[in-house]
Image 1 (cartoon, rainbow, N blue to C red):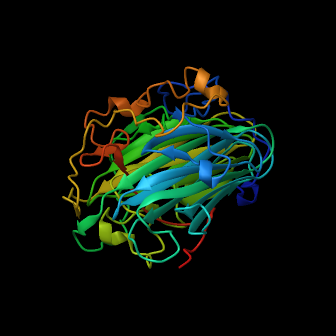
Image 2: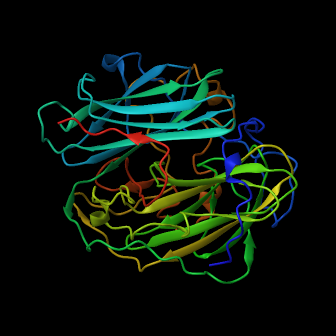
Length: 429
């Protein structure tokens, strides 16, 4: 591990005086270490346009895929997913806000009729430039009598609590087939290993969809400007684990910086935040880097608080800078360990198809006309494989992983650790 720099001023973490998130379309290409840039990388919402229903009975029916809606303050959108017996559904929402104040997002599973309380997740942020995520999962096990685990139609709602004008809402729906053989035993938290080698310049993306690929272990360098969120992704297969840290260079003014870590269903697993002024600061899990266990089915145990739903796929690293001042140097030190394994055995065939394949449109209704993003080049009509992921020659995890045996079933993955920004509701039995 590289030497740890002294913390500049951790009290400045919550500085909420950053410029607004940059407009769509202001992405940059790769930048050299320490190089400045004149335009902020802005978040680019992507997905098939959809309008959430006004009540559970009129919930918009969604197949597995990526969708784009918008929400005003306190607005609730209702959606439904058809979950076959034995399958597990993953549903996540992401909002982007540019207005000062608290931004919160609630994703709830409401059961087959939309009148039960099954699971809920809340994400929130109070910085000026903010990206908020929340996600829930449930399995159609057929157990229980309140409709939360029955196969077939399941309703979920998404509620925004924030200020300012309507904001885009990205929705992801994924399905995982029933597991017949759980595969290898549990594994331990990965230990960070200095990756060595030279610094490798990379241009981070402004959103999950445009996140830059970090192809394995190494030191990756970029810059971050106050007001930006920059995203990177690392792919893990069954049996592999990830550990990493980020380093932000010093400057003349104090800047509030956060590092966020997400699993492939955009559940925020961990974060670290501090004020950075005149010396480089390393962001990690306390005194050790962020780390996951190996991606194995049995590492999903509820008693392991530092892990979430573990499936192969993209793990996201986001660095956000709040405040004012010049661009700062940014480095992401990545260590990928473990040998690829076959993983669990599924009840359905699990051969990966073309990862760039577009998800199916909603099962009912036509694309929403209320979302202005659907009329722009960066809106739903844009190829969802437009990001740097389309250059990943390996293909299997370049985007949502489609599985044979289910027309549009998606399999993603997850990981690890640390300080949680959300509160997860318990399932009602």
